[in-house]
Length: 162
Image (cartoon, rainbow, N blue to C red):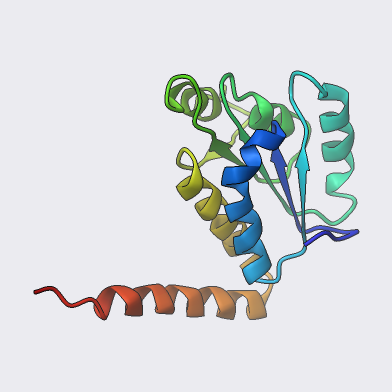
């Protein structure tokens, strides 16, 4: 859901991360959250990352989701350039994503990154956490989130085992 003034920016280190991060895009779209998805690298396009993030808050963005694999510095670079909440999604990589997880979660004290699970679960949960953050000020979004949670509960309760 491209928008001139996205509430959430979904940033990934490369186009190859889209297979996973499309799940964040789908979840944000499901909730009607204006968002923008971009591929920018902390290492290969650092000035473009800084330019985007430096203008994000003034443009109405309230949450940034940053996904990267390997050294996974994207979320940390983003967090260093904004006061907005930054949610990191480690991507699977050469070490099954463990390298990405550790690079994302082990931020130095003072520059926090909320780190989610490796891969698809992390992408979905990052979007849901972004929705929860936005829902603090948006009662319609809060109602949608509650309905989603209720539906999840019903799915579990409706399961019958032999």
